[in-house]
Length: 427
Ligand SMILES: O=C(O)C1=C[C@@H](OP(=O)(O)O)[C@@H](O)[C@H](O)C1
Ligand SMILES: C=C(OP(=O)(O)O)C(=O)O
Image 1 (cartoon, rainbow, N blue to C red):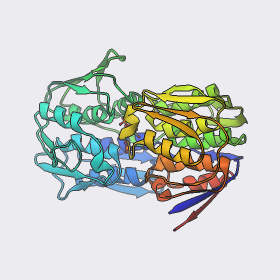
Image 2 (image 1 turned 90 degrees about the vertical axis):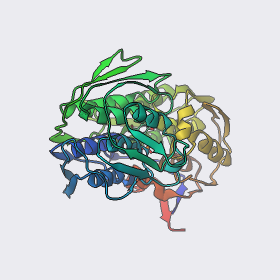
Image 3 (image 1 turned 30 degrees about the vertical axis):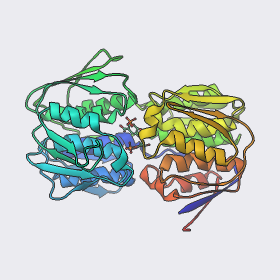
């Protein structure tokens, strides 16, 4: 599918979709609980992967209106009768790799070609230290992955520099083992706010994990616990909202985004990033509304260590801003659906924007740029970010536009509802 984007601004109000990260956690934990109801979950391709995986472990999941009713496996997942295919969802792959270690048999997990190129070695190594036979079929740390159950507690260390999802996955599974686990981190912990999201939902499900030294965290995870999520409402997604807010900042127009209440999401940082770049933005935390009224943008330096998913949004903001925008501490952004540092550099240069790509950074020089035919790399965040650039330059065609179904299925409808000139075609 392609989207043609014309020069346009935004005006009016729009709701942020539910958080993908919170939805994954709520479904996975409900799947390990007894009976739960989840209000306002995000139903997207990625979260459908988590639903399917939980059903394969024996949970019963039914949609009722806007809610999900989940009868979980009460801590003992069944051995799946088939391979678990997570499609494009890295979160699902990591979480379900750890949860499969709780079964009495063997689970095979795979995904699409993007998933089968993403790293999992640190998780597989630590699962082995925790008594599980877990390996990559091609011995390269990538899916397909085979997990022979038998998770035991132990004192283990894990590399935190590639993905926080490995740690979140262990935090989800280890409370259900017989004995306790102590998990500490080797190297810098990237994407740390996502671990806070995990701990937030785990706590709401009645499971206790002690965190020593939040700056260099050690997780003390008592065994023999059980999840009881009961009822949970998913908050709005700040990563998805970043496109709505940036659209108004980049086109000097106006938007109010609703359903944006405080939570543990690291991508709440988009509020301060836009403010620092010169956007006129106000976040009413009580009302859960964030309003942008244009602004004169200038370049900033952004440390992407905690907020990798904002990188495509900040890259296109930088294309608009006066001066240079430097995105650093960003090597882990290369291990997403695509290598997003490289993808954004290649596509923005097609629009006439100077970009300098280095190992763990991307520098964007703001200035005039033109519409172009660009590639979306089958990556939802690349497609959504390039849509904003197209709204500034006009005459832009982006391919693989269907990838927005990964995290924001009605993105183009939402953008059109506030005035964006976006037209989809099946070409
Ligand atoms: O735990 C999560 O929900 C996520 C963690 C992040 O990945 P890494 O921890 O691999 O950076 C982020 O990029 C992803 O979109 C969602
Ligand atoms: C990388 C992402 O998600 P996942 O790791 O779950 O594929 C994302 O949503 O940008």
